[in-house]
Image 1 (cartoon, rainbow, N blue to C red):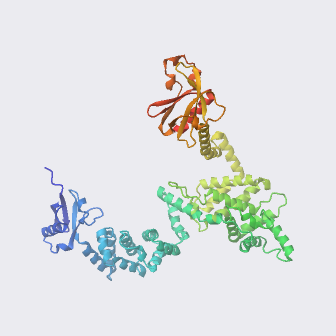
Image 2 (cartoon, rainbow, N blue to C red):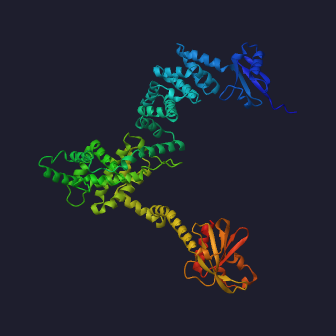
Image 3 (cartoon, helix red, strand yellow):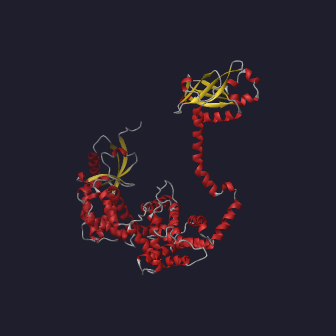
Length: 614
């Protein structure tokens, strides 16, 4: 006979004693069971003890969780949560380093237990741990266990994260900002900062003041450049971070320059000054204006008189000017070389720096999808963007040099501008597809993708695949296919709404009168009715007395499957009539039978009716 459902057979352990095999009556109070166990080992003060699981997380058993105990479970008699919390708190505050370390180890393990955590927090335990962190005197293992215990206790949601002091936040942020820090401390510090950001709006701003993305990039480089393969989840998170980082550029990308804003125009003047080292700054106003116009033409702007208007189109807006200024200031030699090299040419092969920089910025925004939201499940990140604090600007500087080089290789003129940009786009996208680990690797891969190499690759790809399967054709087809399908659907629905006239067959299959069928303008009802003669135009709905709700339509069949083609006399019908027939089945079990006037009409009408059935 099976034991009662409220009786559970378990084994209970106690250090230095033989285990007790007992039956727990789930109807009895837990305190009574603990007292019986203590009596079995002659232990006094049963209120100071509790039961815990011997395996796994070793959680305390409470009145609420005791129903989870199964037959054969091994339990352990332990000191109560309140007593354990009090003892650990005393040991943590002791002066002995070894005793404090052992206490923190045990605390880090016990803090995952909600019952223990509630007791420890009641005794102001979290404040004690926070003060230990704020003191800055704990390092290594001791600090790691302190942070682990703190995080576990806070994760129970008993105490608000808003209670944390600025001193504590600065200390945790300091561990993250250190270039070399123990991995275990770094992991726990990042977890604590993440919880702060997720659980408190005010703490979000405080953490943002202490931690920048640039400071976190250094830690990500250890992951990206490590020997271990990047798992899918981490790859996705890196991709999301990359997308969100580039999306910070969207505001500048969509900001137009105000041609009347002197501060913004001064930036363009700064580009001119750096390129020509303050030349032409003497003379009268008109003379200087003429000289500036000449210089702006040499810089490659479209509007030589007021180049500010070159930045009024978005994208790329002011982002292009930001990139140009970064190149001019941080890579001044490269900037001056590109400008002067092209401004001194008289063979119409000069590369217009200003126009190229603006169009290149627009192109890079498109390639990296600046302003678009991350895609779920995508993990297409580029390692090189996590190797530099100003990765976007440096990427632009590499690409503008590539553009200048490709322009010369193609011996391009102003009329070839778009052709050059197409080649440069291909060079960049091919290089990015190789996933260079650094900007230096990107430069190396771009050097191998010269204009002649691009032509060779194009020829090879054309020879190895059908033109209709080439990437541009596939991309074009994928882009326009949804629009074409939607257009076809709308055209067919419009044709149904116009309606058509059909000949009506009598019982003897003789052509008799006509009838007309059309779809309502809201696409919900088929209207039809008899006509004395074939109409010359559209038939009003008022003249069509019968109707079928589209929601009642089951299917459309054609040819010999039509009910009006299955009668005995159908054997006498020629092949043409069979090809012209189709029927609409609708609830309850009825049909609307058609015979189209010709093969073209039957194809159109059948497809039109299938559209609304689907």
